[in-house]
Length: 208
Picture 1 (cartoon, one colour):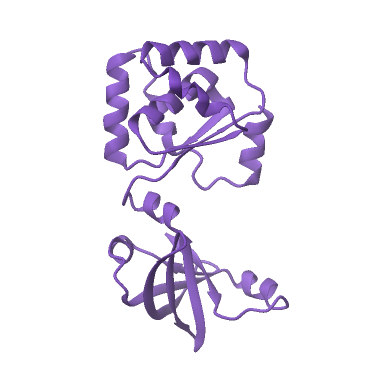
Picture 2 (picture 1 turned 180 degrees about the vertical axis):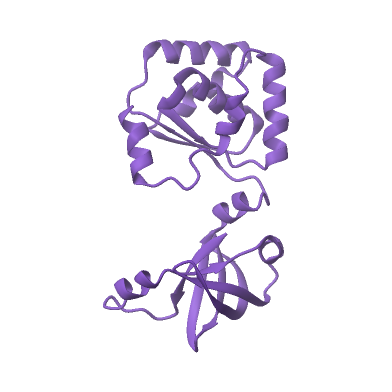
């Protein structure tokens, strides 16, 4: 996983030039699995080309981010990556579940989704999709079930980013398939389809 590298001090006149360098540090599982503050040595890439190493120290987690500070080419630099993104990338722990959906969903889809929830005794989950086109839920199997059912009933009008660890996702999906054998297998593969999306992909779903 590559994460952008920034100087410890960067004024507004320098931002564009620094971003143009495309400087990124390579994180690996060994580095991020243990968050004990300690020295680290990370490979550095500039525009995709190897440029040596960042010599630094893993600071740990600060306000939801993994932070590493060090020096590169005698410049104090800082690497910060959202912890949820790191945890998903290396399958370290469960992270929140997200579902992006279009602003308008067909009524027959709503009816089918609610009927699915009732079959599973999950009527209270009907509130998950009420607030806006981006829905967030805690990483529980029941919430994953509700989101998979929404992806089934609304198809390409929704996109999933279910942050549960792979083994947990597979167990939850297998349990749901036991209750609803007709559920398509490809829904499990859609579980992380929204990872790395940019604005264009999100707009596409919102317009659906």
